Amino acid sequence: MSQTQTAPIIWYRPLAPVAFGWWPSAIIMSIVFISFRPFSTSALNDSGGDIVNQLGFGFLGLFCLLLIVRQISANAMAAFLTPAWLSMSVMLLISVMNADDPMGAMRGMMFSVIVVLAAITALALPRNMDDLTSILATAGLTAVAACYLAVFLFPDQGMHAGGGHEAQHAGLWRGVYDHKNVAGSVMAAFVLIGWFVARNGRPLAGLVLAAAAFVFVLQAGSKTVLIILPAAILCAWVVRWADWAVAKVLILLVPILVLSVATLGAVLHPPILDILQSYSPGLTYTGRIDLWVFGIDHLAKSPWVGYGYESFWGTSRVAKIELPMELAWDVRGSGSGHNSWLDGAIGFGIPGTVLMALILVVLPVRDYLRIPTSGNAGKLAHLFLTIWILTLFGSNLESFFFRRADPVWFCMILAIIGLRLTAHMSINHTHAPMNR
Image (cartoon, rainbow, N blue to C red; front, side, top):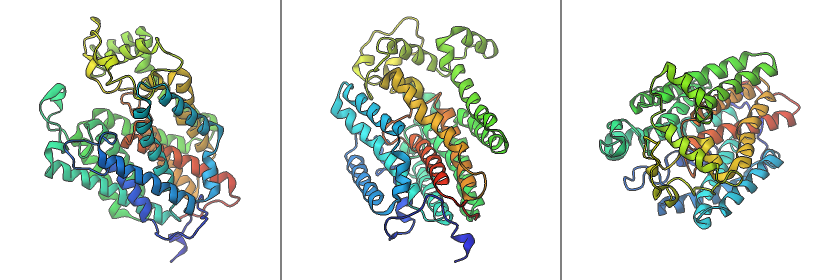
């Protein structure tokens, strides 16, 4: 095998011989993206309420722990033994204890933890760029193929039906996921992964993945994704060519802050909404503003510790209230607040949200700034950064932070862990990574 085929990933330094090649990572990643019952019409990705998924993800978590202990570098795992990551674990535990149903919340939280373990395992196992490219191609093509099979063979699941409160979504594709917006976000990530695969030794597989995923985005009708995908690509490209660290930070954080101000900020400070509606009369973000008003009002009643993990939306606390007269949208049937930051604050409290921002925003930016721009490190950093930007943009309009085995959450945590590993091992290695 030639040197260009075996260019090492900089974080790989095994404790034991790798016995199974790159297949375990590909299987782990594929399972999280499609679940153990991808074509179940009775439980659309309800990982928490389906016994097959419960048992499957439980065994997946044990399998990941075994691989972490037996196969993954202690130096790589040290990247996550930091005060911030440990503090996040404490925050999650407090949120579970504060929940209306602590045992149910613990089961739900375990799915989120398993997703994190799966991301660490999938990214830390590959020995070289060739392995990682194969993993991403296999997992991406498997998930996209499953979604297309759902559309054409199981249309009751694969496409939105015409009834209910979302009749306007009739015929839009969702594949193995529970909503077109989830499908659109995941497929957008696969567009980015496909392009990365195509440029790193798998041109046919990568282009097929990118093209199939992009067609799915169009059929899902997710207008938000069609806007934030090119915006994420442009933002990551500009950051890559910026010379100054301060400029890089501003390029990354300013768009994120602008989106936050234009969404939640418009509710917290009504003049902002007035300005936005002067350009787009009747702007409601498809009813989300009513959800945000309602969520913020209730957050004000418990700002320090919130309501606990998964203990607000979809509970009797919301379902049995009398609908406020000032709201035009019935918020009682919503399963989330359609804003990850608001739902994070409702679940963890404002201090927990600050810690969440540190883990999900500040530290990834710091990690990116520490990664060399050349070689494998630079290639990986660009991919992970673009996926991170994409999901972070989407977090202003959808809720997925720490949400069980949510595939969008998996995309985000893959990007964050990828940046963390690349930065950690870049600092700890004296030699720069080899080019492909």
